[in-house]
Length: 257
Image (cartoon, rainbow, N blue to C red; front, side):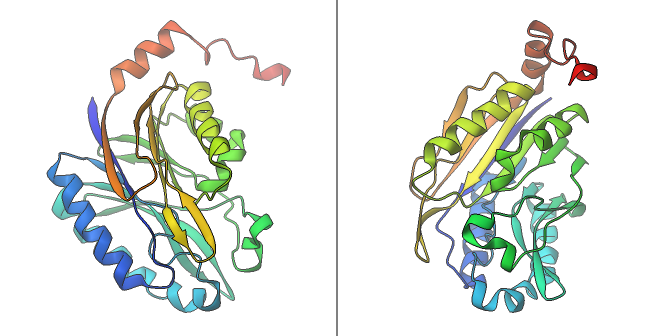
């Protein structure tokens, strides 16, 4: 099976749900018009990390999910991207994975980036997501989760074919971003579709560099630093062939570690 994956890299307008949603509507139509089956959006794409009114902005999320369901059915897309989800006096940073008009799963960001104070506004999730979709088995992690390889490995062991990574990963840590994304693809021998925000958001500068990586760790597409959409074909047979050639999973010794 071959699918066409897209990453929709854009400058998220902090606190302006309507502006971000308008951009995403148009971007999804563009990538669908180019044959995309899978579209990955940035982390917190609907609102950004607008901490002062994040709980209020989170109340918009159920309505946005309804619209994503309609857009995914219209464009025949699997859509991945995180938004604030109401949860008591805090929120979750949640991916609502939609598949051709169906909610295929919810992943709540497990690892909360305390360095930038995310723990003051967000609750962490406690379960991983591997969704059986119309285009294959899709695993999801969010941004800081990249630094915890155990989560990606669990998804690979459970059968993930594609790992989707919505992010808002700021400068100056772009080399960490590039290295970690490629490492997750190499060590797990699956495709990775990452989508980072770009431009100035609040006081932070985001470098983009959304990438689509093959199971060998090669960069198929790199978005650079400006708003754009990148697309690439993911041929699942190449993953199967590479895993047969370098049988890392067969050669594991989990009983010793």
